[in-house]
Amino acid sequence: MSDSIPTWTKVAGVAILFGGVAGGVYYFAEYLNKPAPAPPPVIAKPEPAPAIKFPVPDAAPVPEEAPLPDLHDSDPTAIAELITLIENEAVAILIKPEFLIPRIVTTVDNLPRDRLNTHAMPIKRVPGDFGIASQGDQVFIADTNAARYTPYIDAFAQADSERMLGLYQRWYPLFQQAYHDLGDPDAYFNDRLVIVIDHMLAAPEAPPPVALVKPKVMWEYANSEQQAASIGHRLMMRVGPAHAARIKAKLMELRAGVTAMERQPEVSPESEDPQ
Image 1 (cartoon, helix red, strand yellow):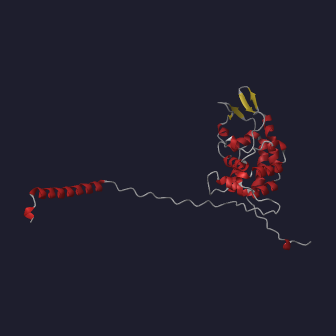
Image 2 (cartoon, helix red, strand yellow; image 1 turned 30 degrees about the vertical axis):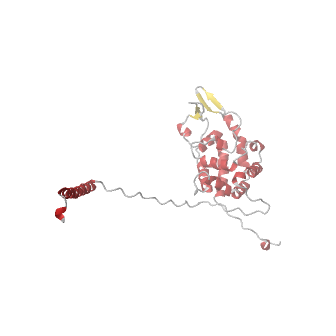
Image 3 (cartoon, one colour; image 1 turned 90 degrees about the vertical axis):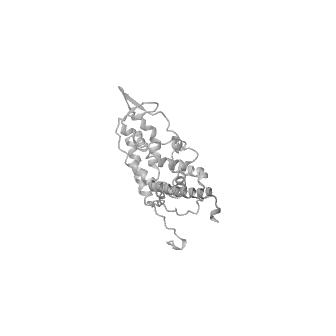
């Protein structure tokens, strides 16, 4: 039967066989010369959520208080409570009427950074023009400029710290939600607040006169280190050393409060002292 296979078929079969062998040898040689394939990428395990350093416990419920509103509906109540706290009409009329809690959270978060969009601030622009003084070719922040900030500093420094901390604790879930909305689901706002307070307390003193330059449209600090400072530190220089000292004194009070919050035990009628 094999003699009946045409010669050309046998030749073709041998050619295919040798072609396959030759191709296999070539492929194998190329395979040996190729670099080893890169190992599969190692997928990093997600970092665990940072431990909360300064937790804010739920505020003890007060029967006559209404439950917290939704964050997006919180402005009327939050603004009313803030106005009651600061007791300063000159400042109250400068509070922006919407997004109060998100604006407070955004402002706090950005104070250690190099810039802050003024639209994110919870209050309107300080009235009056930025005060400058000159001597020869040099320009300085005028001593009178600090007076523009006096109503704000008074409202902040004179506000009852215990009431302020109580409101903060009660409204903390909304502060935390607003901070979560900034983009980091695991970040804890009260921990960030302590970091920012410490940053503000570390603001260097800037005794007058504070020199200025105007390379473009806006005034800048002539000292390169001052100009490169965070927005919070530049603010402390801008308000003047006397106001900065009052701010730091108040911040130290508030830091002690926000780092040591404890829920007050509820007193049941049966446990009250009949006397």
